[in-house]
Image 1: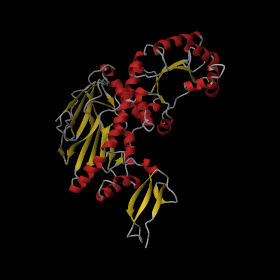
Image 2 (image 1 turned 60 degrees about the vertical axis):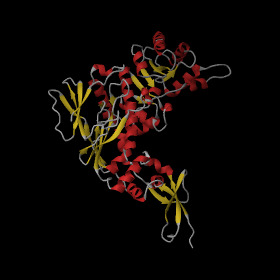
Image 3 (image 1 turned 90 degrees about the vertical axis):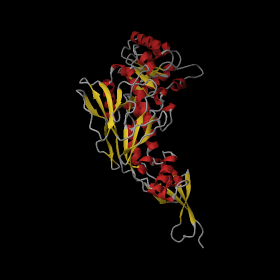
Image 4 (image 1 turned 180 degrees about the horizontal axis):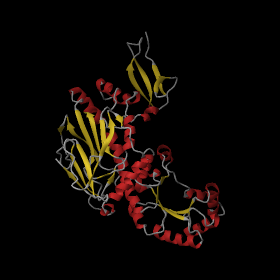
Length: 482
């Protein structure tokens, strides 16, 4: 009589193959025995270290329990449209910036239920649903606003069409990416506007989750930042990197005989060259600037101030640098900056800003507040009537009107079955573009640089009051046609 056996399974080259050991952590699941062991069950140790390659579990359980019920009652195959929109902008904001679209398309490609993912969901799902998930591939269509485009309350920034089953399981994945990246990009765009063309460096990695940090860097760069301190973002997205030293490097050169700031400066310059930026506020800023120029000479690339009254200190440092002949040495400021602090420094002799905490937390709005709602079932508009959470039924299209100068004046959202609105003399631009057809991304996907240019152009197109940092109404009105 055969005894139950345990097989250890490991991932290799994208396939699951038997092996002598498994990498932990691992999940044990029950499976049907192979030939010769038909009367027994056996355990498979699934290597979950490879599960990061799949995005399928970046979801909420209720999406899969809805799927299970829909498969049971036969409604899973009904053709549906889901739309993503924000009911309102964060308090006082006048516009938002769509971001995360490219990351979403990558995550959609990786939305696959392999052995590791099925081992989790089969704990609460029936065999039919587990089998459906095992074979799942999104085969529908997605239209959306271009990444980097502006959006306003009610803008249908994403339209997902397909069967109920294949659309409903994507809700959390779509919202988690778009809400996060859009919040960061929208805050970053306000900071870029406040900086008025001065160099912007994203340095917020230590203030957010380690896996969110590269996405923050990408969203900030898309919105107009010039560089990031996060090396994973440099590797993954090709964003320019930036960074020199922290206070720890200066303190490292202390000893029993005191502080040796000059030695730290000299070491940094010898290693990184005269173009580097020296951090001058570890001890006394005035003395630090003097030592920096004494060591480097007037050709020093820059100095950074990370504390104190940045406006006052920037003026003092500029005067001191100029008096020492370092007229070309740049001043970089950092330390709890947000768009308001940056705007307050606009008249000061600051050449670059380093922004961290406020950026990666959305500067007070850590989520864009977008929702994913069912609006059409088999061609019939459907809508919620819940108090303060009403939705507008029906698949929609959207256009934006602009003057001949390029200044936008209105967004019109209308039923997809209705004629395209006439511009009445204004320029008309369609906002929803094809992103996915029959489950496959369209071939003319935009690059990060193109999205970056779209943000810059969008900010220029806003009415002047739309760029104000003070709380106000959305920069343009959104009209909904029935």
